[in-house]
Length: 152
Image 1 (spheres, helix red, strand yellow):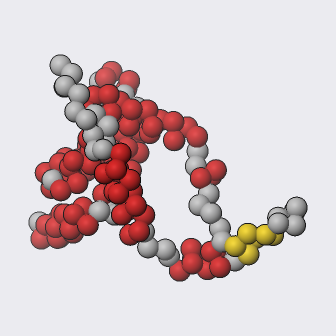
Image 2 (cartoon, rainbow, N blue to C red; image 1 turned 180 degrees about the horizontal axis):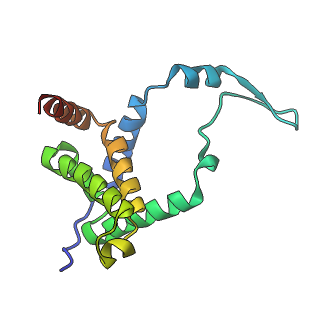
């Protein structure tokens, strides 16, 4: 049974979140070196720095993962997953879902698993973890999960 629509964060909350996440991204030494490089174009124009190469991302990957985000948005509301950034049980559940979908991709046990886009589900899960890893709350919980795994 479909769940009732749950509105996601406001536009301002989203902008604040994105601005906060972008300010936390640490550049690697390689990225810093590349940014200092000067690019000369055939036209004679020059540019300092190197932009992120979104053109190298496979379109099929972007489309399939975007479709997975759409399914989640229709089912649970826009950005519902961000509500789980402070919820350790939710994060562990997402990690388990990544593994389940990867296993279903490798060896589907029923028609439903064959019909599901399991790799897109894994891609969605990885995107979730990547975004989570930039939130202070997420970093703390991920460290707790890592520590528990080392003890277990």
